[in-house]
Length: 320
Ligand code: AHR
Image 1 (spheres, rainbow, N blue to C red):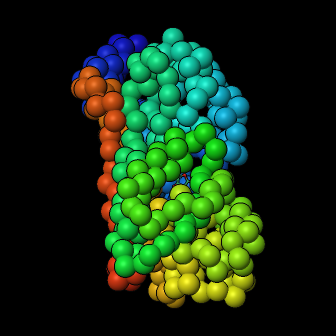
Image 2: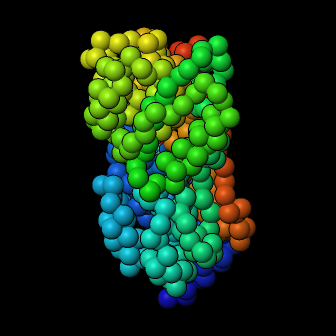
Image 3: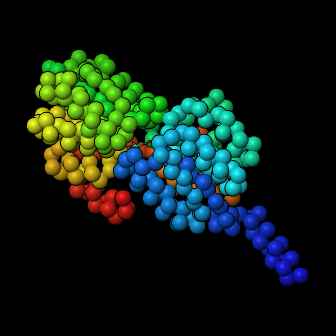
């Protein structure tokens, strides 16, 4: 009895000092789905980063539906997890469920996309890239690439309607090109961040633009849609990367493979390691009471075909 009691006291004092805390943490992660190669990489990195820290990670796949994410968050609250990670599919509609998490004192971390809520205390931090900057980096690349052309008509493949990243990337790209005289966006539509929809939308753009002959460049909000577009361009008898320039976002292995074939021209990296910084922030908060900054911003590096070999190797070593 005495022994049991002293063990319990020892464990509870260890817990209070924080040295057992990371091992005993359970995190519920509401993931959007598996719409893209990037998303699959983010999920797999999250598992690896959790294992490194002995964190028990429960992942729920929302299959692109916010209602499924809301259900998952409620289920995580009922299970009494230590924290909830959400990759929010769209940016609005989160207030009520986050209030519930707050009532139970469960900190919420946003991964890779933002939300729009009046009360910022409803989440602890957002780990994201500056997505306006990502769009701008893509736009600046195109400006320098076509500076000697009189005219460059661009088609834009947008991400999921209502997703913060789609809105921000669009904004950044449009701001970059708005003062140029030669670059114009002639068509823009959502390809839902998927390869198949990207291809379908690109086919309709090609049809509408003189069998693709009027299109100078594709700006795609992610690499997967760009890969779908590349396929559509090839099927139309044109050469992607030459007849039609391709610039996209993510930097997943498949776009570097396309670059090696001369079929893609530039990509802006979005690191799939969003969970690592989120776990670090969570552990620092639980163990030391450190409140993270409201935004943890990841890098947005531009990669070109000359970087393809190196990046492919690097990603292979990282396991994605
Ligand atoms: O939120 C990040 C975006 O979501 C990625 O750029 C895209 O590939 C994914 O599906």
